[in-house]
Image (cartoon, rainbow, N blue to C red; front, side, top):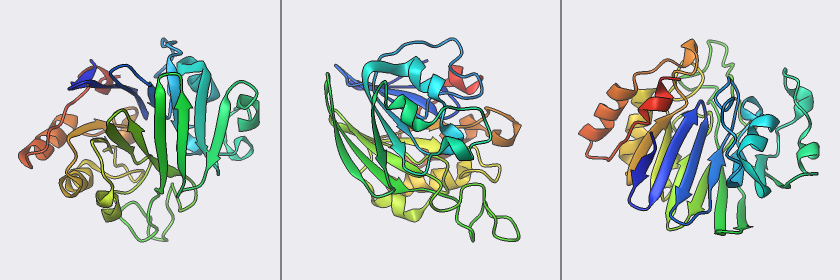
Length: 244
């Protein structure tokens, strides 16, 4: 199921992968691939692909969604040498695409065949003193591992926080569509924290993603949607993808 918001569409393809398209383009994808979510997907229509951190870096997933002339924006700390999977280095993708590396406070204007996309990166992580920290302060996503992205697509802004806690500062962003990370599990914000952030952020639409991919990310999407709707914020579930 594709979620339609006026002239804007959001399709959650599973895990952290969402396809975003204003009417007439350009098309953007967040963190494509992993865990088989794109095994039967070969659209290659993406003008822009963003990658938040090592755990979501999947070169074959990128190739399955990216046009030949796509721009790939990748957080600067993504490094194949430090990933415990057999993945090719980011430099090899630069032989095929325009690859831009960013830190966690960048602004990049990406020119595509369907129009310009403004890309902002923001710091996104698990707070060593926050809800996803272990007793010793250890976290799966320490500061500096990854980032989140705010994308200006058409006349909408889409916020994808990556694998992050739900920080109060995110509410200061001007967000039209919030891709809410609700998987919890000591990995990312849970559905309660994500709903509170949505309330503070007050976007035009909330679409939950990054849950139910595997047991540790189990979450009740319908309960989250009910919580957000009770706060008078429009919310939509991509039910087909949630069941992957």
